[in-house]
Length: 295
Image 1 (tube, helix red, strand yellow):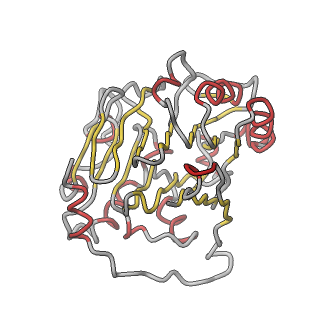
Image 2 (cartoon, helix red, strand yellow):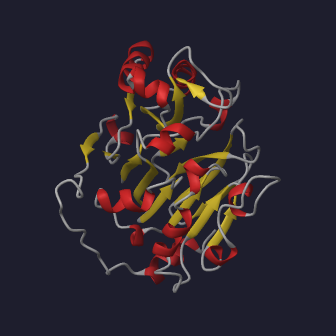
């Protein structure tokens, strides 16, 4: 199983400036399936840039209705459904992302929802599929219906907080996570409403005790402060392996549940080296859809 970051930036000003990429992240080979989480601006282009095939996706996850989390969702759905010609895949997200909630969303049109299974999660819901389950986790953020996610394949639990402020029972929603991925917009001492700073993430890591903690979704202030320095401090304080994500980062997760080790890879920038993208057409949509229809 691979975890690939097609962007480590977040917040409106990092997104507008592209100081860091904002394409979200992918989990590939989760029970044989591939999923893209929070496909913000650039998700399609960054997929090709780092050698990932958007047509190989089996699901799109959108945590809430803010532009840095959803703007490339529809075009990735078109890739997943072969240009809206095949009934396949999952679209999973908050109520605001899927149907709209008050002034937020919807983020996906009725047309783009028409060929895939649509699943709305809240902080108290869970869905099970063949080989894995996913539950919504609570957030306190600008979009009141926003969620995070915890994925469990029976061997490994991967938690993603999405955008949220730190609150007392946040750790309960991400309990027993082996991999903890968190949006950390600001450095220590510079937190902003509705988001975690690195001091908040330190507390969360201490409470959850994951095998690996990953910071992402960096705003201007933490980029200027150097996210890896913040991550190094958290690791020193907690004794937990802590990484600041970077654009084009991949982690092989196959050994995490066995001994806590992992392989960190810098993905090849195919635009920089002018290498072509090789499209594969050997994906069997029908067989994969059987797994997704079991929910």
